[in-house]
Image (cartoon, rainbow, N blue to C red; front, side, top):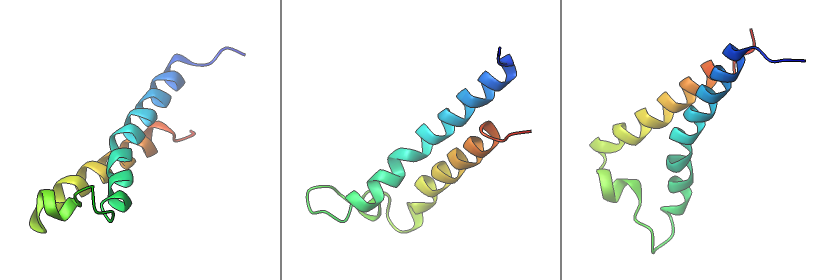
Length: 69
């Protein structure tokens, strides 16, 4: 069964969203270890909006990309 080209584009969009959010989800628990600086050390408490907005935006793009209509 041949897939719709729009399905392939949406799947790529979903993967792009996951790839955008994944580094911040990996960095969060790794920042608790001593050799890796935490997000608070890099961005500061007010600057945590930056990685949070990138992660949430990536997840929203992934949700749009993986939506089954």
